[in-house]
Amino acid sequence: MKFLRNLLFAVIVLAFAAALVVYGNFFTLPTHNTAATRFDAIVVLGTPSRPDGSPSPEQRERVLEGVREYKAGVAPRLIMTGGAAHNHFVEAHSMAVFAEAQGVPAADIIEEGQAQNTVQNIFYSATIMHQHGWSSAEIVSSPYHLGRTALIMNAFNTRQPSLSIDWRTHASAWPPEYGIHHKVVLTSVEAWRCLQLRAQGYPSSRFLPLTPAAAH
Image (cartoon, rainbow, N blue to C red; front, side, top):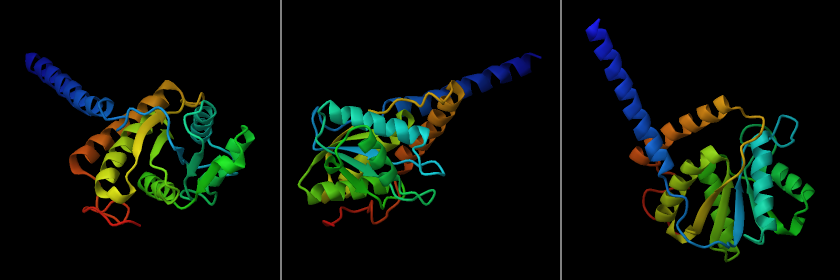
């Protein structure tokens, strides 16, 4: 009996230690590389639309936060980024239509409709920014997604120096449809992924080459 109690205690201690490492890493990830409070653009990261093309809960909250920041004067324009990655609706277009419905002039919205994942969101958005001579962005996404976004930004600025930008992440609200269990699961899965990525890094691709890339 004593052996079982000791074993249970050891398992609990190990589980606590593992959770401490995973969440400790997650909640100490960087949130910015600049102290700036005004930016050239607000980049709203894509997430799938509903099957009918209307905004999904996370897409809605990301756009609403981007619109709030735009109206607060954080940046004079919005870049909506995301292709038809999960269904046939281009995320950037769905988000742009919704932002216009919230009162943002179409002239202040740029649609980036190629990206298939977060790395590509950053690559294509940074490419657009550099084509316009813009060099700083506030990046809006869901609360649980910001850690991975920060890891990508650090890798991107190192491995794509010709496209590097000053940045800070900014969280949208959680969708009210999400209960505490949903939030905990999303955050836990993402925390584990971030620990893996911090340890292993991102694989080489044309979006994140292992050696600094020339201008695109």
